[in-house]
Image 1 (cartoon, helix red, strand yellow):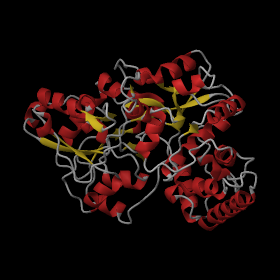
Image 2 (cartoon, rainbow, N blue to C red):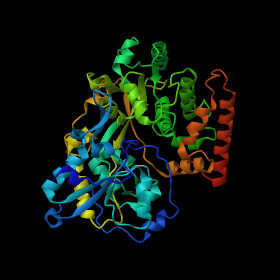
Image 3 (cartoon, one colour):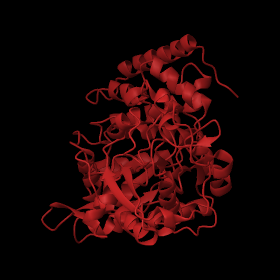
Image 4 (cartoon, helix red, strand yellow):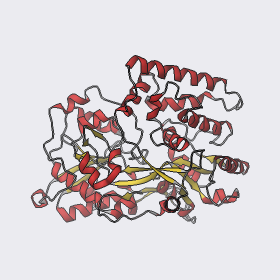
Length: 483
């Protein structure tokens, strides 16, 4: 099958992957009719993570797969000698895998690139059967249960994926999106040439040394940290970095235990203030980048030293390194020790769900299982195969972190499960007007005026306002932490 025949692209295609399919905090945008949408279509396939299926009867079937991973369908964005952006089709790994799957099974795959959940949500709301498999990761738990076919039980998933199954989207003991990979996430993506020019061979082990390195980079006329503040979603990394500050991956949800999570004496508030202090110190870009691609270019071209982001950013920045430069100058290392030890988040990766309204559930399951057993494809995505009895291929980008974890220089924290406390914390933040668009970070971060870096008056007032709104929201909803 020719590649062009394989791929059917939606008009709203996203040409840069702008989200990550890892466990952890996701925004809640629950459709009002989510439960009703799925109420009349209970499970009509067995709840099993895998199983022997006679695929011969499925030959000629066509499944429609919707993904936000435009780079996996079209290829990574790269620059030619003249600085023009083009797509490297050799890196269109999902398109290549779909072609192999068709050759082996006779099941055809049509790939559609969707911008985000909003592109397919209307189809689910009217129980449209045109979507078979989808990968967009940012759904509320209620939406997972309403729109996705239960893939397997939690117990079955644990048997195949161990403790990582606990971090997969689940409700009432059912897994609604299987995540066949794992990844180290939310660390330091950096340009090795830049930090070496500043006098450093590696990312420093302590916050104090990290700050000194940023000062040295800034003195060179280079931006220490590329943030892309034009949008709020890059600030979501604060939730995971708070886990590094506290040495507890569940610290964001555990904010529910107190009434003042945004105060600097508490881990989450301390982390937001640390980011804001970096802003006051001039460690972020002085002018807002027009889009995320420009922000990544800044690291690739050495105009910025690093990003504080997940592993999914690494191959995209490597693909943007100017011709003549070795892409391996873009590396991935743990964040410094912020006082409780040196950590990195280890999470299940790569969401794959079957639409509850699909008429091709068996073929869809076969496709997802095919993915789960292809260790090289998973590595090409930038992840590590995690299914039992599948020998993983470790991507080069993890080499620094792997060795540090193995030597005990860094501890891997497994991303926490999304449970009733997670839902409760989201409800409180929503009631407080702080959840949507990561306002719980953005409002504080923006409160500090960079022209008055020593004046934290507005910031402190915002801390008080957010703590008050949070406490009032919790009281109004009658929500408490559940052990």
